[in-house]
Amino acid sequence: MHNLALALHRQGARVTGSDDEIFEPARGRLAAAGLLPAQEGWDAESITPDLDAVIVGMHARSDNPELRRAQELGLKVYSFPEYIYEASRDKQRIVIGGSHGKTSITACILHVLRYHGRQFDYAVGAQLAGFDLMVQLTDAPIIIIEGDEYLSSPVDRRPKFHLYQHHIGVISGISWDHINVFPTEEIYREQFRIFADMTPKAGVLIYDRDDEQVQLVSVPTNPDVTYIGYGPHEHVIRNGKTFLINKKDEEVPIQVFGEHNLRNISAAKEVCKQLGIKGKDFFKAVASFPGAARRLELVKEGTTSVVYKDFAHAPSKLKATATALKKQYPQRRLVACLELHTFSSLNPDFLPQYAHCFDAPDVAVVYFNPHVLEHKRLPPLAAATVAEAFQRPDIKVITDSAELATFLRAQQWANANLLLMSSGTFDGLDLAALATEITG
Image (cartoon, rainbow, N blue to C red; front, side, top):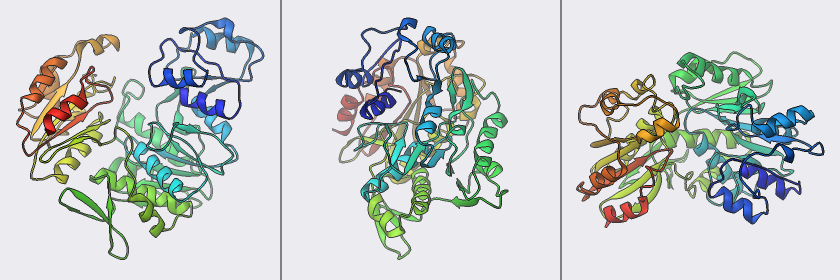
């Protein structure tokens, strides 16, 4: 939301806003642009009849006093995806959907387009190297949108990616998530079927052809739509380095690795082809693609060890990331630590989805903070319940961050790698300092 505020400010709009808490980097960036509210909290008096529109974030409540005031005044109220669509009505819209991989696919497409000097707008869910904002709105002819399946706003319960009305759509994979909103796997999958069916006449749907759940919703049913399936890009791995193989059997070194990223690259390549980027030009650009922030991101590398962090927390992401790092360095031990931080991951009804997803590491650790359960108003969770869900007898479950740090430091790090996976921060664990100790 603060990125959208900054993008609109750059367009010359008069932008005001509010929130009950504003953290970095949003606080500093808003302050630098002169957009930081004088005080935190809500004030209905700030909503006046002269406003053109109000854009409401997902985490506002339906009884928010400013939202209620806007409704009373009859002001136009947009959700984030509604406004992005409104601002891109005259553009070609490319929407990247999926339970996993959508940020990396979007980031790869943006990198390739920028490398070749193409004009484009975008809305992406992570800070990307070389892009100062996560939202850009100009007069560019196309927009690349990361299509989140979560709800649009407290007063609009539709998934975000249903509102963008794509011309080119991508479904990277489907793995049940957001149990608080989609209580069954079938209900969750249905949101992707709706997205697939929204592909318009002369539109394109690009999908992971090997994902069983995706196959259920991406069956070619509309003769007026082009369906394109993709798999992992052809490649070789040598000495911890991955090389793509192009049609001329030439090897193209890349900075990312793992089967999931090779699938992401294939998806990006298919999108870029639709946008007029030839294969040779795609390979030229993708060689310098650094990946998306916090997606299998290198923290520190030493002579015989390396430390990575990853945003992974869902079962499918956990399995893909841990397997990728093990395959990339098959001769090294892998110590992997997952923080359970999201509503779904801390829900006892969802935990069985993690069965055997953490089998790849040599040492597997699961961390969670009991206070997070209280904050999310979830019932207490026993460490034994978590351990049982993963179906791995030697898994270690830790609920104290100091104990976690001690355990990790005590491991033997000669010829071993560390992978830290979370959408949180391991309760403020100093990853840089820990990585420096580990890598020597």
